Image (cartoon, rainbow, N blue to C red):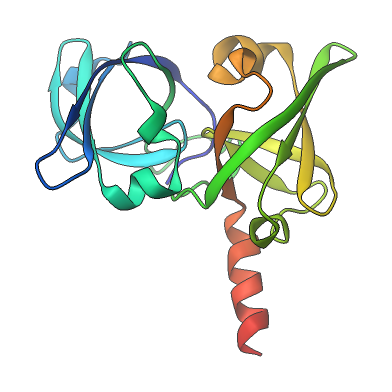
Length: 197
């Protein structure tokens, strides 16, 4: 589990194919990797991935075909910047919202415009996913916990403050760029319960 509070912005060092499909990604990080166990989970731009190897300033994760089909990871190349968050530990501060690292789909950036001291980002998602996004609810974009301002049929918008723009990859997003989206976990379960009743 994660909170959507990014603690490092890493950089993809290498992308290698796996024999039966999938990718092996080597990611440079500022984390003290001696404190990262093999088998640990790290959120990589919102995707929960397992550490399979590591070195002094890097770690390696594998992405399956399923992960590549549902996220933006297949677009990553050497030099791609990645939002990183280590798994939540008992007693850690819950600064964002509960994030599982199980990406629900990919959205596209429609527009980015100044809004006071922050920027308003508008995202477009497929309608099957949009129904789970609620005004003043939470959403994770590339692993960053954000509050939804408003929702229309297949779009939603959120404001991103300067600190978040500077300390995550959100500040470098451009119009048309795809991003990983995870809906609020509570919305997912409430919708499932409604379907069964």
